[in-house]
Image (spheres, rainbow, N blue to C red):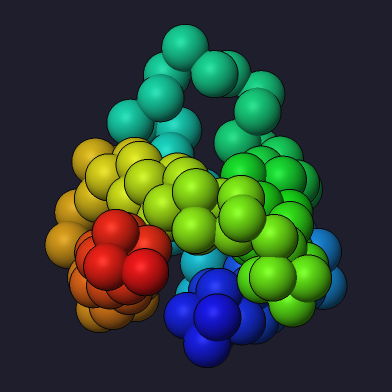
Length: 124
């Protein structure tokens, strides 16, 4: 459960930064926009600012972890499956980041956390 909260906080912080400064200049994320445009040329117009990335982060990483947290608190039998799915989703998210940006500390940290979330769900 601690991992889901940590991932959710990271997603909320990322979404907040992207919405506060959609150009990415203030937080040094403007380079990421350029890298996304190069990595995904078929998505022309989608990566002109960080709004699409913020919505994707919230929907793909944030919401599933909210669902997992709720299921864990309710002690629902689907909580372990939900946590496993969240870990797998985060793993794919990190793979896309690594493809687009290359290795960086934040992606590697959350990649390790994704593996931890998957491992904990399997053991649980």
